[in-house]
Image (cartoon, rainbow, N blue to C red; front, side, top):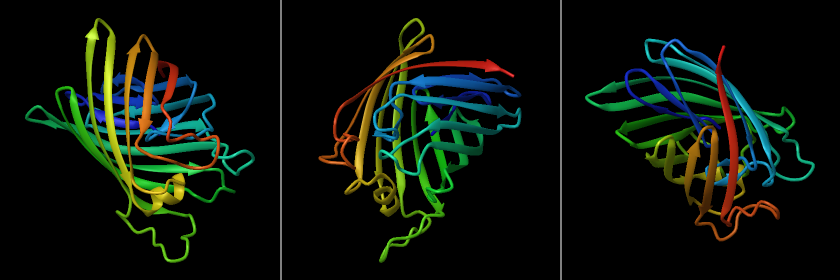
Length: 239
């Protein structure tokens, strides 16, 4: 999933996997990434195997933006998932040195998976620090007996800090908390959990170390309770 963070003067930093690109207002750009593992909120989305990802983004001078992004996924051998395709739009701006970003995000998967869902999100940024939340809106998945996937049932809270440690070398620190019935249903985790990571990025390359506080998570082969190391390379270009 592509996470959106606002920067200054209607510029948007669009983070794909573990890379980041600054888009000037009015830009139409594309991006592509090859990564050794696709992690989403600290959990592997493809059995800890490599993924190929890409997207297209447009940022208007008004602060409105819209984009789409896709990646291969696999949650268990032979399951009904082969791809994730996201569509999102939002609005970003700045008031008194505080940047804000609000938007809507739709996650689309293979039709046989029958699990598409959507969220609304918002974030505030000051300097190199940002906080945010993604709030569950709706899913097409059938609800298990005794559980209702209501609006706001599941929320993912985040805090991030990034800074340049030397010329063109960025260190990014992240912590998040994900909890709710749909989180447990979709991710197969036994409870709400914390994920945390640190990454170094330079010239399109990123090295990420990520883990969670889970004691056990998901089926064999996911290892979502283990420390994960990810290497990725991303390129961005104007259209």
